[in-house]
Length: 217
Ligand SMILES: Nc1ncnc2c1ncn2[C@@H]1O[C@H](COP(=O)(O)OP(=O)(O)O)[C@@H](O)[C@H]1O
Ligand SMILES: [Mg+2]
Image (cartoon, rainbow, N blue to C red; front, side, top):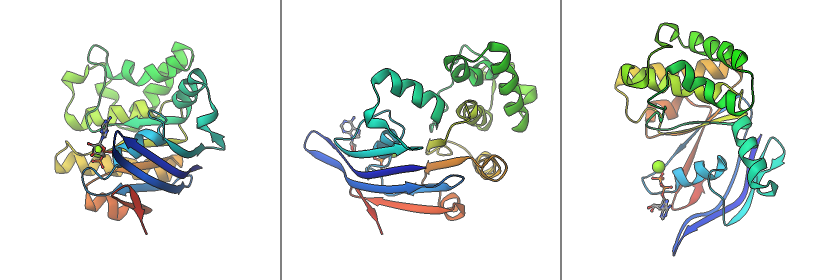
C-alpha cells in the first residue's frame, strides 16, 4: 500500500535519511521508533508528501507521488493521507464539528454530506456532546480524538501520526491508543505512528527501528 525505495534526505551537510526502504500494508499499525534526532519526523513528513526526498521513490496505492504536479499532489494528499500531530493543530476559532468537516469541504464535498460524516465519526468517538465546543473548551484527550476524526473524514489510505500521545496523561493516552486499534479492527484503517511509548509500540503489528538515518534490521 505504501512503499518507499532508497529515500535519502539531507539538510545542508547533515544527511538525515540514508536510504530508507519500507513497505506498509493495508490495515496495519506500524510504529516507528528511535532516538531523538534519528530522522523519524523527517521520514513521516516525506511519507506524507509534505516534504520531498533528495533521492528515492514513494508509492502510495500505486501512485508514484514524485510524478505528481504540485496541484495534483495537494489533492492527492487531501484524499489519501490523514495527519495527527503531537499538538492537535485544530483551528481555534472553529467548533470540533467544523474542524472535522474542513478536509471534506476542501475535497469539494457538499456541506450537508461533510456534516453528516463528521457527526458519524464524532459519534463513533463518543464526542457527540462535544461537537459544538471550540478547541479551548475541550480536554487534551478530546482534542486529540477530534484531530483523529479530522484525519479520518476523507477515508484516507493511511493516517500518519507523529507522537500523537506525547502530550497526554496516562488515561487519555490509553484511550487514544485503544481508538487506533478499534479503527484498524472495525474500519481496516492503516496507521504509521512515530512514538516513544513502549507499550503502544509493543501492541502494534510491526515496529520499525530507525537510527542514524537507516532502518535497523
Ligand atoms: N528543516 C530542517 N532544517 C535543518 N535541519 C533539520 C530540519 N528538520 C530536521 N532537521 C534535523 O534533522 C535531524 C532529524 O530530525 P527529525 O526528523 O526531526 O528527528 P526525530 O523526529 O527522529 O527526532 C535532526 O538533527 C534535526 O535537527
Ligand atoms: Mg520528531
